[in-house]
Each structure stands twice: as C-alpha cells, then as structure tokens.
Amino acid sequence: MPAHKLYQLALTLTPRIGHTTLKSLISYCGSAQAVFDTPKGKLLKVPGVGPQAAQSILQPAKALKKAEEILEYTQKNEVNLYFYTDTDYPDYLKQIFDAPALLYGKGNNYPKGRYSISIVGTRNATAEGKQNVQSIIKALAPYNPVIVSGLAYGIDVEAHKAALECKLPTFAVMATGIEKVYPELHTKIAHKMLEHGGLFTEYQPFSKMDPGRFPARNRIIAGLTQATLVVEAGKKGGALITAYLARDYNREVFAVPGNLKNEFSVGCNHIIKTNVAQLISGGEDIAYFLGWETDRKPATAMPVTGISQNEVSAEEWKLIELMQGKELHIDELSWRSQMPVSKLAALLLGLEFKNVVVALPGKKYALK
Image (cartoon, rainbow, N blue to C red; front, side, top):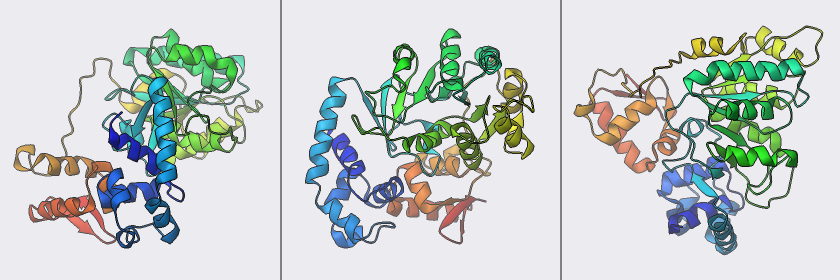
C-alpha cells in the first residue's frame, strides 16, 4: 500500500477533524502528508481548524498507529480504500458537499460513465411493492444502469436481488464496518454482489454498531447516483430521508404512488404531492425523465463558454467543466478539482483575464 494512503487514513482518524474540515486542510496544504507537516500557525488559518484540532494534527502518533493496523487488515482482506481525491472515488458522490472523505469498499470499483439510480423503501415491503421493484428494474435493464441501495430488509434487498437477476451491477451502502453484513441474513446476497458490484461503508473495520449511523449512510445512497426512486414508504423513515437528501443534492427523485389506505404508500404519496418526487408508473418513465438511451455513446463535456478546449490548459479546462451551470466557492472548487487553493487562485485569475470566468461575492466563481 502506498505511503500516501497511510497519511490519508490517519487524517480521517484524527480527533476533531470532520469531513468538511479535512477537505479544507487538503485544499490548503496540498496532501494528507503535508497536513501533518504544516506548522500550527498555518493550520489555524484553515477554515474550521481551531486550537484543539490543530493540536490533534500535531500529535499524530495514535492516528498513524491505528491507520497502520487498518491498512494491514485491508490488505489481508481485499478491502479497497477510496479517498475523495482518488480517481476511482465515485464521481457523483464527490459532487455532494458532505461526501465522506474516505470509503471502504469490497468488490469492484464503482463504474464511471454509467447510468445509475438508487432504489429505497420500507423494510416492511408488501408483495405488490416487491413486484413493482422487479418490474421497474427489468424495464431499466436495457439501459444497463448501476443499482444502489442499502441491503436492508424489504425494498432494499429486493432491488439488489432484481439487479442481480437482470445481470446489472449493484452496490450496497452499509452502516457497519466492511467486515459485517447487516442484517446477517443478507450475507449470501452481499457476497454474490461482489462479483459485478460491491459494498461500501464510511466506517472503519470492527467499529461499534450504532443505529444512529443509518440516517447518515443514506446521504451516500442518495449521492452515489443520478436519481433516487422510493417504491414504498410510511410517514417517516430512512427512505424519505434519502429522498429529501437527493432533492437537496439536486438529483432527480421519483416515487411510485399507492393506495390511500395503505400505510406504506403514505410517504410516496406525500413526496409526490409536495413536489419532492415525480410520479412514475414504471421503469420507462424513469428512463424518459432522465433521458436515458439504450444505444448511448460515451459523452464528452462541452461547456458553453465561447472558448474551445485547445485555447486553455488541461487544468483550466477541468475548472471550466466543474463550473458548468454552477456557482462554486473556491474551497469547493479546490476539493472537486484536487488542486491547492494557491494554485487554483492563479488559474482562476487567468480565466478571468480570458473573459471565461467571473469572480462573485463571497469567494465564489462562475462561468460568464
């Protein structure tokens, strides 16, 4: 395992350093190893880093020792580590502001450039709900999407099963350590998923089981894909949390309507009524709304800027692609582009002179 992985992992294990602060540190310092080599005075200038956090960074022995133990475990057990600056970190997930800095994974890398959808719902799925999942995924199969869910009872596991039956890659996001499948009853299907899909978690191996982690993992389910589908849901629960998160991430949300008297249709009917989700009656509706095509060819980004790719550097073009249709803060641009703020500022200034980028109040930037 490369040395930089040790420092990346150690940084995630450092007390008082959350995901957002960690990304700011990488942006300002350039790499995880550089963070540990940065003097206290400079650390305190990083947004979100106070005296106690800086002290934790300057005393890394405990975090590094724990990181060594975890790396040894991951190497012996074929566990992959995906740091948010890695090229194989899932692209859609990298776009959300509260994405985990590090993912533990088993199985395959998350596919790039593929259609994708998360499918969630109640643990107490009805026979009709399960049948709806199967028919929707069967209808989506010609588009060859990635199917994501949470491996829970009910709708979640039905989505994984249907994906496997249709030979589609399917990934589960867990709220446990990578070594523990929960519920245990789904261990067999989890192992089968490793052939063409995989398992993800943000929690270190052998971490204590905590029910409070399930709502947090829902942001990863919502963030991994283009859209989220809710098949059955009660008044409240994880499926609705995932739907609202997907909406907040500017992802499409769909829901299957149900009988007004069915308690597991209440949630779906509500998010349709309040315009959180679009009503769908089958997989064809999802493909239509998302513009999926069965004969799709790999697309290349062509930002509408009035400037061609050969007129700018590769790094400048990368920033143009990232800002397409968005206003981004310089810190967010930094972690999305994996460039230090100092270098980024120089590139943005150059793009301003080329009349491609405009600086906005609050250190935000956008294309002209």
